[in-house]
Length: 174
Image 1 (tube, rainbow, N blue to C red):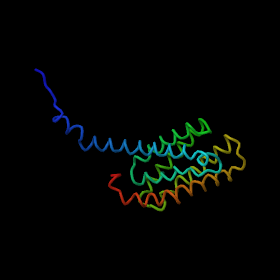
Image 2: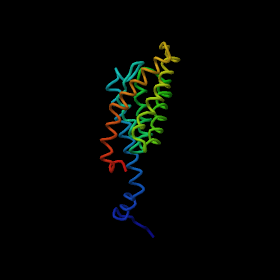
Image 3: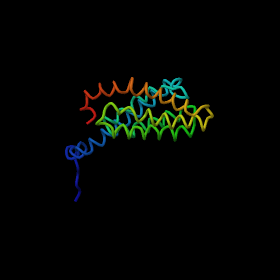
Image 4: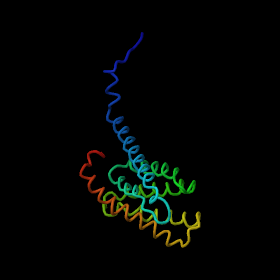
């Protein structure tokens, strides 16, 4: 005996709550990754180096709104660093720093004023060390300070207001 399955029969399976939520999560992460990578590459002259303001790092507040921001930011950073000037060490260390910072931003979602802080601290330390030890940029603490200052601008001057605005549309992220 042959069983057939019509589109009408399959539709409830395709649009079930669980599948919809997985698809939404994947789409959110992919969009975040794409925007992060494009912003970083478009603004390359200020996105890399000891004195940088990586505007895309403003997006590190997004994990406070959706956990899809964590893998989205990690993947976006990997792609941005693949095309950046610093090679494999930046692809690995820089991307992991952003991913870890995104995770801690997610954990701080109930303390909005602190959400932008993890990328400032983690990237300041990690990227400062990478620039100093791997690329010979002098004065470790100055490297850390300049990177942290750029992160402070991106995450608090741009990211924090962005988070406040996007919270008004929280239904998009649920």
